[in-house]
Image (tube, rainbow, N blue to C red; front, side, top):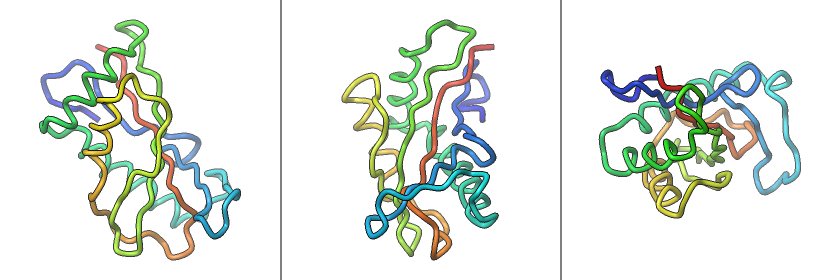
Length: 146
């Protein structure tokens, strides 16, 4: 996904297996369960892919939070021709589609964590399939510079 038409680097939500980093972990009532993308029902895969596309849009916005997050991630790039390390985000999506950030893998700094939370919390997606395990895990990273 292109962050800006004029940017050389791109930000994307990654696929982990079949569906855009679809690692599914169970809700609190069934903690400890998980399901690989290959074993997930097709409607869960489709939901994860749609969620990834929405998250791509949110992360590409010109607002301060998304811009700050991209700047922080850029600092982790090992070399101009390499992608940044992937950051896993864990999202809970309630029955009305309201998104909340449940957690994430380590970020470069506290400001990046605040920016990520600002970008994601309170967003809305379509309601998830009623039986889908959560949190939905998606990974984000900056693509290599062209």
